Length: 276
Image (cartoon, rainbow, N blue to C red):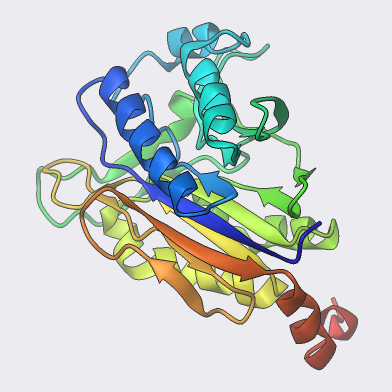
């Protein structure tokens, strides 16, 4: 494994069709590769956001030749990237699909996958009467159960999704399994993201002394369901290496050096100090 390499967080604004969403993602992945990124992360539900029949989509994506799965494979291969493909619905044995995050290697092979464990069933304070305040993700998706640390040629990668970010025990398990980098594809709401998104990304980095990449959908001014954006790359000290703090699609690229993990843990051996 190389100690230093470049990574990219892709931020997308949902468009009116799957074709537009894929075209927008492809353009930014190409830009990330041209900027030297070797690993890129797409947001949660980047292709199908706004769709309603997730079960039908999940059935179509349950095979290797699913539209978005093929797209992700082709993008990884074309751009020679390790690619965390956000999430897409994938049908399984349960009545509802999983929100699944696929990891592709630079040859376009799917090398691992993670099903979102924590589902967003919450009520939030809405800024206006027209803004959505109640979310029941479990109406559309089944919860995963497997904690995933994937081995890549770059690092050991702990895979998570969006609402997972609030559950520190998951990230502790990933760190205990020697993850060096956490990926967090997300569709974090504007109502919660303004106050919590970057705070939580930084907390997960600091308390585990690892790197974190958060790739979020954005549409802060949407009249009913705003999306925060704020896609960021954060180092084990909590330093923000790059962030998109605006209401636009785009990408942030940063070089990370895994040697920093060892250096920080040698000076502050939190793992050895744990009592509980």
